[in-house]
Image (cartoon, rainbow, N blue to C red; front, top):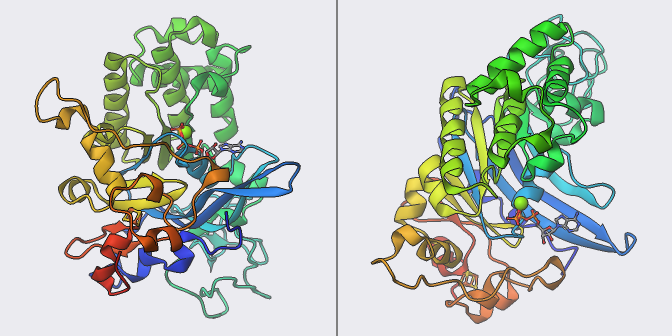
Length: 425
Ligand SMILES: Nc1ncnc2c1ncn2[C@@H]1O[C@H](COP(=O)(O)OP(=O)(O)OP(=O)(O)O)[C@@H](O)[C@H]1O
Ligand code: SF4
Ligand SMILES: [Mg+2]
C-alpha cells in the first residue's frame, strides 16, 4: 500500500464542495450533530515498522434525530471507523493518522475539561467560557486568544463559520474524551460480553455509569434509574436482572442491558455496532425496533453499523457503503436503493434475499473476498471483484463523485467520471 498516498477525501473532499445544490447556510436545527471529515485510522504492525490504513479518508455527516447506516462486508472498516470517532482504538497499535471529528456543542453544556461556561466568551465550539480558560480544542479564550480554525473569539479575532459551534474531538485529551463518551456519544459494542464486566452484577455496572455522569446521585436513586432503563429496553423483570452477572443472561438480555447502559447518559448520538449479531431472528427484530422507538422518543441520532442492506432499508435515513476502509457510496437510503451507483452497492443489493425474483432463486454473490489490509490493491480497491473494471481502475483510486440528478449522493467509481468530466473507464 502506498502509505504516503493522499486519503480518499484529500484527493477531493466532495462532501462540501461537489454537492450539486448544497444550500449556502443550514439552519441550526438542520446542522449535523456530527461531522466526520477525511478520517484516516492506521494500525502499526511488526513492532511499529509497518503501518496499515484500516480506514482511509472516510467522510460523512450525521443529522439530528436521524439514523445513518454504515454497511459493508466483514473487514471493510465499519467498527474501526466507529472506534476512531470515540477514540477507543485498540492500543498501542491503532491510531488516528489524520482527520476531523466535529461534534455539535450542546446548549449550556459543560466543556470537556469539566468547566462550566461562565462569562459570555464565545469559544470555537460556541460554548461560553471564563476568561483564560482552555477550551476543548486547546484554544485559549479571551486575552491572548489563539484561534486555531479561524473562528471569531471574544476579542474579535477572525474565525471560520463552518465549524463554529462544534467541538473538535481529535483535539481532546483522554479526560476530555471521557467526558464526551457516554455523555454525548454512547456505543453499543459488537461483542456485548467484552463490554460487560463478567465479575460484577448488572446493578454495579449500571450504577457506575450513572455515577460517572451524575456524581451527585445517591445509590438508591441510581438503582431506581437503572431499573427504569431496564424496563424501557423491554426487560420484563428488571429487579431480578439487575442482580445478575452477565453470564446468567441470554444474548438478547445482555444486548438489552448494553443498550440500557448506553442510554443511561441520554446521549445525543448512539453508535450501535452490529447490535443484533449472534441473536436469533426474532430477538434481532425486537432489538432493532427498540432502538428505533427509543431514538424517536429521545430524538437521538443513531449510527447503525451492519453488514445487511435489509437492515439499512428498514431502519436508516442515510447510508454510507464502505469497502476496503473507504466510502464506496453514500446517499439518502431511498436514493441508494432507487439508484445504486457503485458496482459494490449493486452487488450487495442483488444478494438481499428479499430482492430475489422468486423463491428458490440462487442469489448472485459478489465474487472473491474483501482483501486484507496488507493486500489492498492499488487504484480502486474493489477492482479485483468488479465486473466493470477498466485499466484506469487498477491505476487510480476513484474519488467520490456527486451523482447527477441526486442530491447528496456520491459514489467513488470511475464509471461516473463523465458526470464531472474527469476521464472515463
Ligand atoms: N487491532 C487490530 N490490528 C490490526 N488490524 C486490525 C485491528 N482491528 C481491525 N483491524 C483490521 O482493520 C480492518 C477493518 O476492521 P473492522 O473491524 O473495522 O471491520 P468491520 O467492517 O467492522 O468488519 P465486521 O463486519 O467483521 O465487524 C480489517 O482489515 C481488520 O483486519
Ligand atoms: S472504479 Fe472501476 S473497479 Fe472500481 S468499482 Fe468503479 S468500475 Fe469497478
Ligand atoms: Mg465490526
